[in-house]
Amino acid sequence: MPRPNRKAERRLAILDAARRVAVREGAEGTTLRAVATAADMEPSAVLYYFTGLSEIVRELVYAASDRFIDTISRAVAEASTPGQRLTAAIEAGSTGGLEGDESRILYEFWPAGLRDESLNDADHALDRRQVEIYVGILDDGVAAGVFHPRIQVTEVAWALVALEDGLVMDILAGTKTHGEVTALIRSVAAALLDVSLPAPGGDA
Image (cartoon, rainbow, N blue to C red):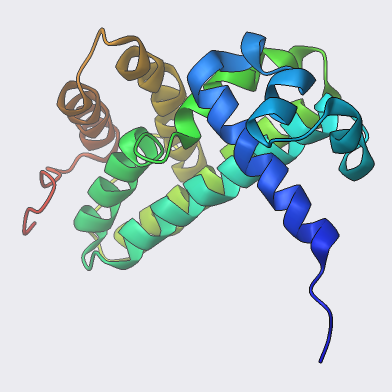
């Protein structure tokens, strides 16, 4: 019987501790010592499993990105018509990362990407994955004669992702509600596609 991979288990435990620290203390409070304390370890012991705090943060951001995309993909898969799928993508893209704190983690560490090329790559990769989801939905809607884009499909997709990126910050800051943000993005999408989009749970 194979022995359990203790190193992999400890890495996951450290990343879980880092996630708790990041959500509670933000990027500024996510120090090596804080992560080690949350993991019930000494900082020197953490460095046996990771090269340093930068690697922990990178792993944290990539893991949050994967969970975020999974949330959107599941929401879209549960919808049927192009309009319902687009509404589901907007809902999940704007609020789907809030419950599991993915959005908070991604926004906390976004400024670090200005100095860390790997984090910047993670942010761009996440945007591209969201755009791919939108393009798939939009192409299906165009083929079905439901969507009538006023600009190129890829430009619509990038515009929606950019709106989400900016407006989720308002949700996190408490200046807009989930409903206000998703309704605004749906209205922009409807205008760009010359279509009436259903509200969440709608039949159109």
